[in-house]
Image 1 (cartoon, helix red, strand yellow):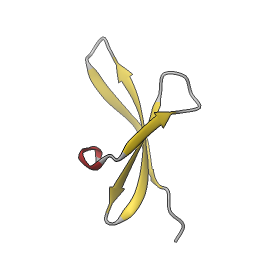
Image 2: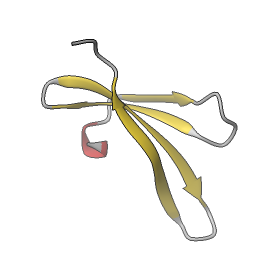
Image 3: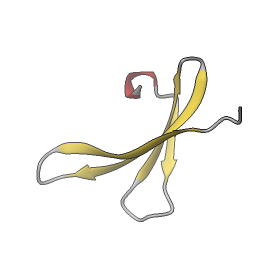
Length: 52
């Protein structure tokens, strides 16, 4: 999903980011937090941002 990211913004939690992406033609938001010590991006959660 992250390879289809279209934008990002700061999350309400300091140090986290919201990645806007698409999956199965739906808009999703993926909350991520960088871990600079491990040099990885930790996915906290992902959810559909569209109503059914």
